Length: 387
Length: 90
Image (cartoon, rainbow over all chains, first blue to last red; front, side):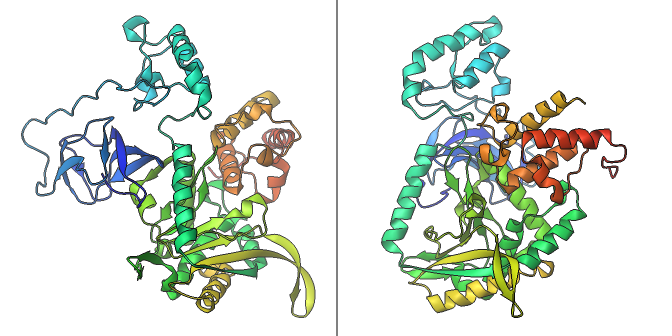
């Protein structure tokens, strides 16, 4: 069970993506676990043959527990008969209060009316015993479950559409702990800077005019890519402060703060942002936002962002003064681009202006270094054609 | 495809983007982005879905015409009925 951040103590295994005998390559998703941050796909960090699972579905184990054996020495699938995967145990807990690990809903036999009612009332079908033909769940079963669990449901937060989605209350607890620690331990300094991005937006409009919607770029991709390029020149903002010392990261994994629909916030990383072409950054961003929306991201994405970008521009605010996510040492933000009177070559013109900001860790750097870094980012974001 | 079909399709796609909302409850003249809390990535997803499903490629300059349900229905109905207006690139 990998640790996906210093705040994680345990995880619950909800799905195996590999079975005994399967070939596993480094980076393959082998399992899905559920944590306070939601369902997270666990990637293998070595290659080999999936020999067997050590943890059963539904089991919650502490960080550091071995969950499966991958035999790295074997190059080919096992010659001997493959041992069957352990059968999933019956849902152990009563669900409405503490959802049992969900079975994929499609596999559960239930009438359409029962499904609809269960969805409306936020009840996981996996937790209901069916009384219909072949144990299928019928309307009255759901009604009974509602009657039994109604009080519990109403007292809790609004029913969740996705049982495997993030636990928003738990997520808020984590955010509270991380930001409180940040404000307690990190001496922040803050800088803001206004940037005329008219040329960049014009370039984007021209580029997008020739593209079908699935290949269009958003300003966010330009901001991300420019940030990663600026970090190459300013490595003192990219890394972690641990054990009273700063450790710069060789690789640049920009975390993108994404609001989860219905509440909650995560900042999963786009790995090696600096090495990806602009189009690829946009593709990754699309993919990431789509997955986060349904509460699904990968272990490596959560574990290792080296800096965070937060774009509150979408909500119409001018600027954001963000809080560093420890153990990172910097977070940058962008506000809404607005038409402003701006002086270009001695004349007042209407230009698209954005306010960018930096919160830096004073134990690692200072405002002077921060100003140089922000200026570099500003310069690069104005020239997307060079990114 | 009738305007009712278009309305259904629009509401379906909006629901995919904002699953916890009911787009059918949004007024015809309301800004859907504000009513359903849809950001620029969400809107791009919406436009991409329209392109995939009914082959109408909405250029960026026309985005503001699709910010309300009424506007989107009218716009798409016009595009579908105009010969050659649909994307022939696929």
